[in-house]
Amino acid sequence: MLRLGREFRQSERDAPDSAGDGRKSSMIARNVALLKSRRSDHIIANDQELNVTLDRIAKFQRQVSHLRNVKTNPEDYHGSVSGSLAEIDRMQLEVREYLSTHPAELAKSDA
Picture 1: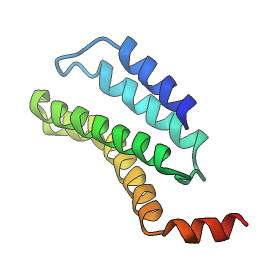
Picture 2: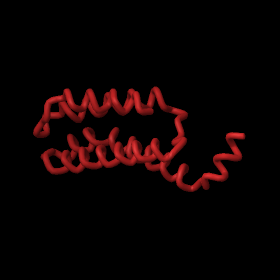
Picture 3: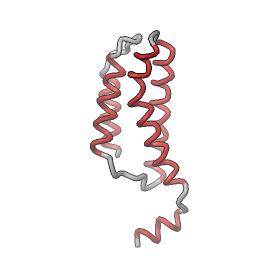
């Protein structure tokens, strides 16, 4: 998970900031597709991964919030954020599944 996180951060850092021209949002959509294809069966295994996932959720939420303020056309906005919102939902489900399991239950399943 950390390796993919670095790939995501690197490509996000290299992308030009846009004022709603779609370049950065299309980059995020590519990253979402990359992460989905590589992590389709990933579950959060420990608190470190939980924190990384929570940070990623916050990043996606900030990006969606930014696009909400800069996109002037509702159709463009919805097209730009649909992948990010789907990724937020997926990660939030992973967080919920991890938090709903007590550490003692995890230890039993590992044994």
